Image 1: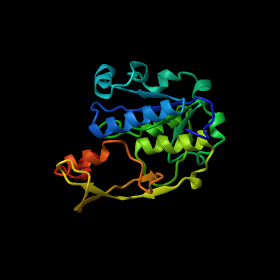
Image 2: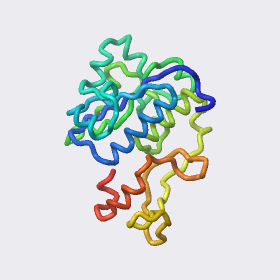
Image 3: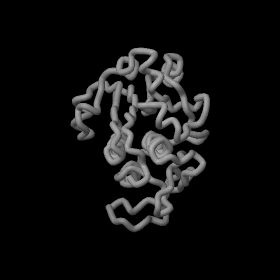
Length: 220
């Protein structure tokens, strides 16, 4: 993408969930493609079954890891080069972090049931935290915003956003025309695309249509 630095980073999503939902698959495939386009590497770690994830996602096995991020970066020195995207980070992510860190870690960190504070665990083990702002983002949006900051040199407040958009859904039979009677409010902050619409994974709107009978809470 024009304006990005030539340096290569690694973007890591620690999944830690026994299931791989369809909406997660769309997000992970999007992150992988955008990493490829920006000469970066994508790793999905903490997978229960990397082979099954390979079949589901179609991603190379080199991007799919069963081990957790602590084993990938076992020493304090190695962990200091990994940026944990953390709401409790000491400061906001900035373009200079593209030089300071080799890898960026975010989730995807869904954890167990009952949930554990996985981000807090990683924070305590020497992964340096940076914030993306107070609004909740999808995993692919968090990766996208991080990449724009550290590779394109934009600060968080220079990125155009769409916050909590109402997504107009097409009719369920596959036609592209919007259905004036069906929309869903997404409780996330998205990057605004050149068309003024929120940037979302390809296929996400169709998935929303297909799953309308389940309700939006089942997708989040």
